[in-house]
Image 1 (tube, rainbow, N blue to C red):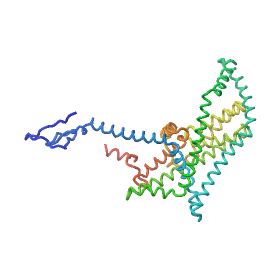
Image 2 (cartoon, rainbow, N blue to C red; image 1 turned 180 degrees about the horizontal axis):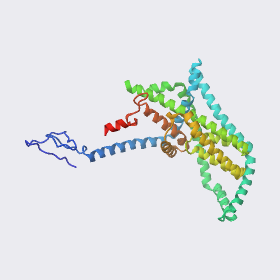
Image 3 (tube, rainbow, N blue to C red; image 1 turned 45 degrees about the horizontal axis):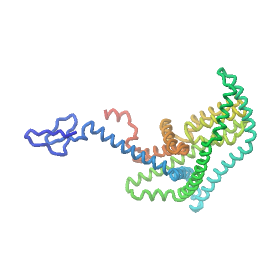
Image 4 (cartoon, rainbow, N blue to C red; image 1 turned 60 degrees about the horizontal axis):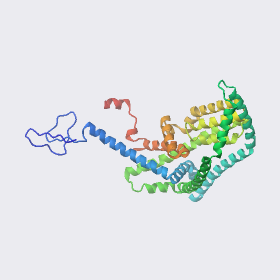
Length: 392
């Protein structure tokens, strides 16, 4: 697309660098550039969008390729934000920084180890009972299925059982077991990386952030300080609030399972606690699993009671606990949560689903304090009706 030039009344060519204002007559000495018309502006914006998408794609590729390092560091950051108040409280009590860090770290590892030991012990003690009840329940389920309006023959059921057994004996399972060994090794390595990084985050977190802010001065330095403080508060508040809500859900559902005589009540309660860290879908998955265990091991009536219990607990959580414990500052729109969950799961699987929402919440909080403690970035500021009327 070439340049359109016009001559002034005296016949002299227009001056280079001048552009015509759209909708106004072309002044003397003006020239129209290829990027100044409507199509040029669209092309400019398109190039900018493509550049941003390219940066995002490179970051996503780096995360997937370096997940063995990136994921432990992110988990350590989230855990450090959650238990940093304990370290600060110990320091205010006069303990040295190193000793306070070790106490908090050992306490965290002890709690996690205790939960794992409790689950394993409950599974081992109740496994024989669960197996017997599962076989009886499966037989009852076969009888129930055969009584349905559409016919499912014994031959079809046996064929499905033989297919499942053949799958377990296939080479795919063997290769999956080998892949599982490799993933276990990666998990152990990532766990130790996470512990080491968590130790230094707890001990020297503010110093590390101060080191990263050295190139900045003035208002940019103050902005970095605000973003760092807001991110840690948001991550810590989100994890602690979610843990409180998850504990309440796990205790309530666990008590109900124990009263109904459902086996593996403790492991199922722990699973409810863990899946509560995955918004929207975690509670649903835990409820479905608990209902299936009750259906197979106890009976259909108890399974319906378990399903009703899960629905009631989740409803109380959403209407009562979430607004009180989490607060409005940490609440995200369900669409944002869904997009974050999908992106995190696609990138790094289950770990990404757990980390996606707190990271999205911290990013949104950073945007809210971008230009001041209570002044969001310009694009995120709420447009008041009077402002919109004046602009129009």
